[in-house]
Length: 517
Image (spheres, rainbow, N blue to C red):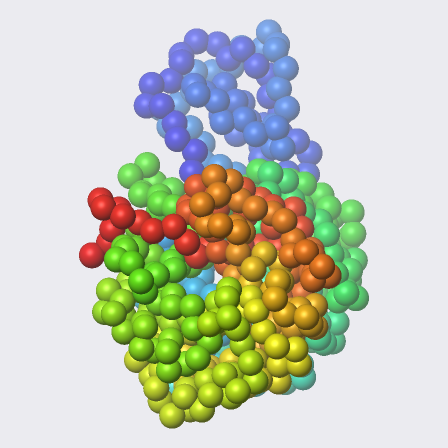
């Protein structure tokens, strides 16, 4: 949100300003705001030159940021962090990241009352929590028909990851929402969903669907780009030229309003009219606190060593009882001392970087049996620390992760750098972890000793797995780092490879005044 001084410079304007053709700005808006103190004069909207033409004294309040031609200006209101709406917003979306309708409704409750304009709720997202399945879409239809969404004006399906063959279920969900008088939007990652094997067929359905009011391609990857990202979704077979087919109005999702002119011109060149946009970046009120450290999706875990008293970093959302054992009985026994002090969701680790933590077939089979017997029922999640293992355990690892998910646990796999250093078939194993649908988080360790002053970006020697391959991961990427001071560099490192980090797990202990009770 732009901030303006309460005291304006009277006298004659020193610049003669005009709106950039094809943008939502006007000459009056540019002249008023570019000659304001301090100026609000984005070059994407206005061009100015020094000129003799006198301008009238500005009024005490500057004009608001220009609303798009179609008067559709939405914004994504993240449910995990306080935010404000951009000036002129016509609708706000409670963005929660869940494909499960009950979770979406629950997580969105905190921001509902503060949504500006029409109130939308999102369903879906870009990780395993947001992945659409047949059962989740059927549950959504049932929930809509039961009136659970009746206080919302609209629904936004964030389709990024999904099982195949869901065309019917998606159209039924959109039809159910329209039948309840809701407005409907479908947003997708760039030109098509990146995590749906039948993305091309699915997009043809969305283009043709008469119950979809808005289609919103995301013109960013990390959400922190300085300019729009016009890349089409890799391997999906859908170009932006095909958006001419869309019956729904096109309102791209962009980082902020300074990107709109370029995005509008991009689509206009393809014969597609934009009717507005949806903003990702937050417009913060001056008093709104910024979370510290700022993690995009509020995932901030920490490793709580079972052999030493420690505390959680500020803002922790989960803690892992780190014990170093691949034997499930030993892991449970050693973790008992720290269980009650874990902050946030309580995870337990299995595995580690020595012989005690080495995975074998018998230990993984024992883990599955122990999970199925309910021995881990008090834990919210499990973290497999895969550093050393026998070969040929792909089936056993998938069975362990599936058993944990079947018990309602969250799942994480952490590995030493880019792949396990002590598994002869590390390359095959990583392909499994990248593709596994029961892994919520993948956490490469960006350190060796855990005492590094800067992140260690080395890839695992001789494993044949590069960090570039992490684009394949269905699981969300939350690197393990020494402490929060490393996160910005690690996030930038992965972003350069086309990988979005949604948080991190801290290795270093938060001691003394930093300890969270």
